Every structure is written in structure tokens, then in C-alpha cells.
Length: 608
Image (cartoon, rainbow, N blue to C red; front, side):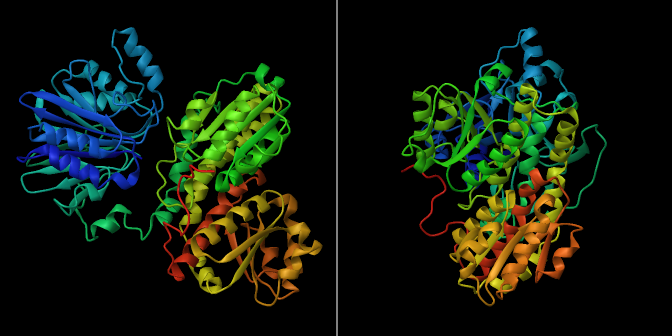
């Protein structure tokens, strides 16, 4: 998720901007830049790489000026490069823009502007905003911004400055976070509080559809249509470290709570109003799909667990056999790969070495390669034939949460798109699946509205030496992820077991008061799981069950029950995993573990 900073006042803007950007480094980024109004001209400095590159350049040759905007970029459109870095400007460099979010209809706007003679230099969606502003600007920057916003579709926050309006910054929020800082003879804009906390603790927290006209000694707030509004001043009482986590104790819990938005950001740009799916740079045709006789999904760890859902969805909707394999084992298992093979590589970072090497093996055998990743310009994304970016935003905690749920959402739209092209899904089945997908973000948010119950459950098991998870079908796949989360962050020994296999050996591990997390979120396997719960209860287990709302029968067998909103079986895992993530987090917290940086683990695994 990109970082935005803006300053207007009597001080030199550049060092305030770079200092603010430094406080936003935790958000993740691949480039940084600033634009400062200097002696009647907008001067832009921006570079690929760490903020230190920009900082060093400014130290060598300072930029004067008292108004400016800055940006750290997490690439979504166009690989990391100096040209694709923010800020962006119109051709005359009279208007500069920083942007956090995604302009969903940017290609349509870009084509319209190109037809009028506008020339684009970057691959970003942001540049269309600059040229649109140029198109609409007639001396009134506020009106130009309002016209531009009326044309844009997507989720975004904007910071705008203009050479001919040297006494104001314009800021707009549409879903993506934005605040306005209130100072003494100086004011600020930013995407998060840490960027300006050194200078002020008084801020306006902007809501969707609002804009601010920020001057040195005044701030005017309004709706996008110009209707004036008033807002309460929020006084920050956090320390800097806590503020960087948005008030949360750890990044992991912050990222768990970001999942409804992350899922929405993954789905909404790809689902049009008429329920058709548009998958960016994926160019699979019906002929391609008819040619494939098998699909491999290759990944590691949490991404592997997301791939298990991909298998279920592709086999159900597309009717092609799917093999899910661990990347570190794949190359050594003599896989059957040829030009009739589709390989889907899943990696949050896009740099996982085992997955990357499996990709290269597939290419050498003539397979078609698709990547599902979160990082634009990553090695796996560059090597793949087709790429779907999850757009989860940077994930800082080592234990993956929102990356996992957005990977699952990605597989849903990939499978449905393939099914439509192949003609293997009925219209009715497709409509049901799409409507369920559209409700997924709100249902995820519903789970997060009341988490105290999960905190209580953590109190019951945090001193345990062993915890077992059981499930069948998709529920077993989610059980694996829940078990992994618990062992990653709490260091409790944990295993996932197939409910139907308990009596074939693993039931021997269950004894009096053994915590067993039993997933029963699939309607078609609900009765079977009730029997499995009774099996472990008969051996003295303490059972915490998970089921859909309304399935009250489970309360007769389980000690405690977590309920999730009703959802189709195929999408249930995207919801049932959230309480399991919360449970792992609160258990680890009670045990005093280093939750964001578990021992021996790294966020991106770039060695075999």
C-alpha cells in the first residue's frame, strides 16, 4: 500500500516530505519520490529502490520550496522503475499528483486521452489523473479535481499540486486512507499518521467521498460535489511505533482486520457491473483451455494451502484435473509436464526460490505458466506468461493472513473465468458463484465485528502443549492453514488431521483435555463431521468447533462453537480461516511471543 505525504507552510518542504516517507516505510514500497514547487516550477525527484536513494540525491542537491508532495510506491501498474515512480506530472509539468490505490477504468481513460494527443511516459494508472487534470484545468484547481474524480472508478487517495496555484494542496479520499494534519502556520496531508506525527498530533481523518483544500493557514473540507462539511479534530495520543501499526499492537492483527478491504480490492476491479470477469494480463483462450489436459498448482507454505482451494474450484467449474504440489519437492518428483500443461505458481512475494525454480522447469518443458502474486515486477511475475496480482497491499507480519485470503479470492475468479471460456459452467451456477463472491468482503467484515469470543477461546488453550485441527474436504485444507498459523506464531505443537482418517491411527494422540479445533463449515459434510467430533469427545478432547450460522446441532457435541456467516461450501474457507488466524494471534499474545517476527522465519524465502 503506497505512502503519501504533503506539506504546505513556511519551512523547506523536501526534508519534511522525506522524513514523513521514512515513517511510512513499514507499509512496503519499491520506489520513492517528491515534487516541490521551487521558484515557480515543479521540481520532481523520484527513484526506484529504497528511500535512501532519494534522500542521498536531495542531500547532494537540495530542493527549495515550501509546498510539496511525496510518495512511496507499492507497484500495481508497471514494474518498479524511475519512470513509474511517483509523483507523476502532466506534459508541461505544471500539475503533479501522488496516488494510493487503483484506477480501475484507467485504460479506457488513457485511450480517450491518447486520441486527443496526450502522450504517456509511464505504465501507471496514476498518469491518467495528471492528463485529465490538464484537460479540465482552466484556472480553478478544485473544480478540475472534482471533474476528474467524477470520471474515475476505483479505490484511491489523491494528493494534487499545481504550479499556478502555489498556495494550496488538494487531497481526495475514495476508499484508500487519507488524513489531513493541522499545524501552526503549516498543514499536512498523509496516508497515515506516522508521517506527520513529529509535527502535529491534531488531524482530520477523511472519509470516503471527501476532499480537502489545504493552505498554509487554513483547511477547507467538503464532499466531492463541493458541499462544505465539518469534522471533529482527532487528537493522536499514540507513540510513533504504535501509530505505524494504526493503533494495533502488532502488524499481524492489523492485517487480519484489513482482510475485508483486501478481498474487495482483489475482486472489485475484476468484476464488472454486468457480472463479467476481466482478468488483467491473463490471455487464456478457449482453445488454450481445451488444449490443457492437466493443471499443476505449485506453491509453498500458506500459498500452498490457498492452492488447495484452487484445485477444488478449478476441478468443480472447469472440469480439468489439478495437482497441487509443494514447490520444494516438485522438481524432484519427475513431474509429467509438456505443452498440454498449465502451471499456476502462487507466491506472495513473487521471489520464493523453490517456486521460481519450478516455474523454470515448467517453461523448459513447454508448459503455460500463470502467476498469482502480490508484488508487481517480481521474478515470478516477470517470467510467467500470465499474471494475476492479488493487490493485497504490503504484508509486514511474517505470518501471512490477507495474502492468503486474497490468493483464495484470486483462484475463485480465475476458475470462473476459465469455466466461462471453456463453457463448462451453467449460467445459473455462474450467477450464484459471482453473487457469493461479491458478498465475501462484507461477510469477512461481519466476522471481525465481534472478536471477544475468540479471545476467550485463546485463554482456554494457550497453555496447551499440543493442539489438533480436524476437517474434511475444504475444511481439512483450512485446518492445515489454521494449524500452521498457530505453530508459526505461538510455537505450540499443532497438527491438522483429516476427520475421516482419525480412526486409522491419529486418534491415538487424543487424550483427556486435548484441544481439538473441528471445522464443520461445509453443508455436504456437516453430518460426517458431527460424527468425527463425537469420536474425539469420547476420548476426552476439548472441542472448539466452527460452523455456519444456523447449524445449532453442533452445540450438542462441541464444548464451544465459532459461527461464520452462511456461504456456499466452495467459498467457506475464505471466511472460516479468519477466526483461526485470530485464535493463533491471541494465543501467541498470551504466551508473550514475538508475533510479527516469529523465530527462525522470514517473510520472503529466497533460498532452497
